[in-house]
Length: 119
Image 1 (cartoon, rainbow, N blue to C red):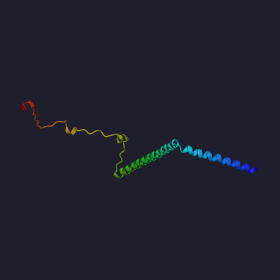
Image 2 (image 1 turned 135 degrees about the horizontal axis):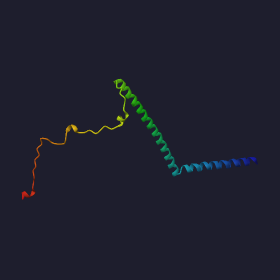
Image 3 (image 1 turned 180 degrees about the vertical axis):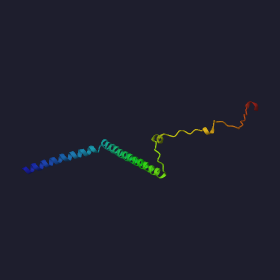
Image 4 (image 1 turned 180 degrees about the horizontal axis):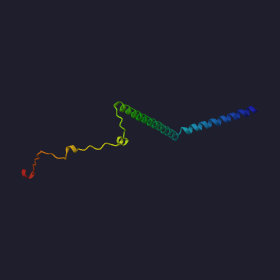
């Protein structure tokens, strides 16, 4: 009698466990759940990519500064670097050397044409 009770209880527990697992899997496979999972994975991938890109940019910047220092030492350039000057844009070029906009020694001809004179 105890064996039958044991196996009945074990079967009922296995049925409840299997039903719970199947229901969870069905909920995971709904379109809304799949869309949410895809969005979460995309956000995680974006964060990982951003972290790698920032790390890469910092590595490039540090190596660039190191190489500039090496070149400066090799060329004997020990002048301090002004960070504001490096970040500022150069002033626009002006045409001061060309002088005012004029056309010297150019003859202009003025020909007036009246259509009424042809008739």
